[in-house]
Length: 117
Image (tube, rainbow, N blue to C red; front, top):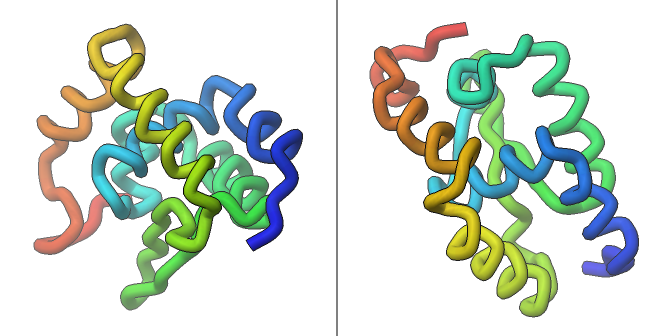
């Protein structure tokens, strides 16, 4: 995988993409509906950011029925994976990241049973 460092940090420089990245780092894989609920943003806005992240090579997708799931790309260079893990460790107790984790944990009807959209 050949993501330029500038592009990696550009993706993380946007607060929405950083919040998405931290959620994916913590959870592994999330449905778009989980991200819209957690971040309290519209589906088109979340999808636009995820599309940018996918084009940059930061995330990959998996379709399950009509739902799209996203995860950080497993082939990210080790230094990028380390940077994301360190960032999560650093922000986990800070707002809005701690609120995001709480909102996701409290989300009713999380995928696996049925998705919310």
